[in-house]
Amino acid sequence: MTTSAFFPDGGPLSEEEFFALEEATDRVELFDWSLHVTPAPTPRHQHISRRLANALEAGATPERLHVVEAINVRLKPGRIPIPDVVITSDIDFDEQAVDAEQVLLVCEIVSPSNASADKILKMHYYAEAGIPWYLIVEQETGALHLYRLEGRHYVERSVTKVGDLLHLTDPVDVTIAPEKLLPPR
Amino acid sequence: MTSALIGRSLPMEALPTTEVDYLQLGETSAISELWDGNVLTCPRDTPRHQMILNSLANALRAGRTDLNVVTGVPVRLGPGRIAVPDLIIAGTIDPDIPLVEAPSVRLVCEITSAASATVDWTLKMHAYAQARIPCYLVAEPDRGLLHSHMLTAQGYVEQSVMQLVRVTGLNI
Image (cartoon, rainbow over all chains, first blue to last red; front, side):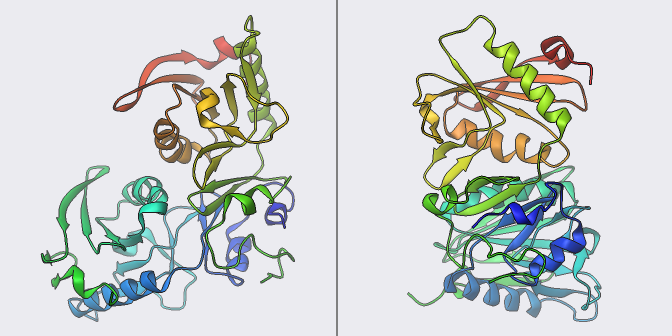
């Protein structure tokens, strides 16, 4: 098997071609016209994602804010990651991708072995796109790392471990207990 | 699973891509790298990129017969992590194995493009430092600059910035 067919003439894909690829899988992101293919998420990952989305939604005014999992977010042309969870302002629920301007908080659920893309590359991407909040959840421990955009970089605001509580006031008003996100042992 | 656009299976079903899977991707017109079980596939480089690469390789080879200057070969940075730097300078390597181990690599050089610049300056810079590669060069054709970095305990520290044209002799 090869990936040469992804770039039939060697040149970059258009966004239309990228979205057509995605019909076959939702595990492909577009990173500056390069394809980033990730494996299907584990049950642990999906459990945490759903619990977190539910927890965030409980604090979101439904007319103003929305919480969605695993959608395309266009940060700029050719840069379309798929964050695990986002909190957005008003969006078109039938559009292929939402724009960075509509995103207030991005969350990625990471495991120690594959955190580099999320902690380094995506952190840079989201900061450059001006997304105000970045939340990283460690899927093994449940620890919550909350970052706030200051200028052009994220600054760590808090680390919340199991046994503590994360009090969010912006963009939603909600208290999250990390142990409530984790699957049963 | 297949897509009408590409008519072929995507690289993996549901599991992280292993090193074995990655190495079986084989020769392609696009460069693929393995990043902790994820595959990053970049579009083909332009002739401008290749011309700059060739002249940088020649400049780095000049007068040194004891080092191997190699372009476009995969380098294993760690378990599940295989990048394809534009150029490396390596010590003794087996020239018939198409995968170089990081401890053999003395220097990596990346030539940035619109598609690669952010990765070159963030993910790769971090990964090459983590793999303890002593020297990291970044050529920026758009700005006409060549940055050199040396590895310290805190990661890469910029040592110098040169005019790229003075190193390559190429006015492109």
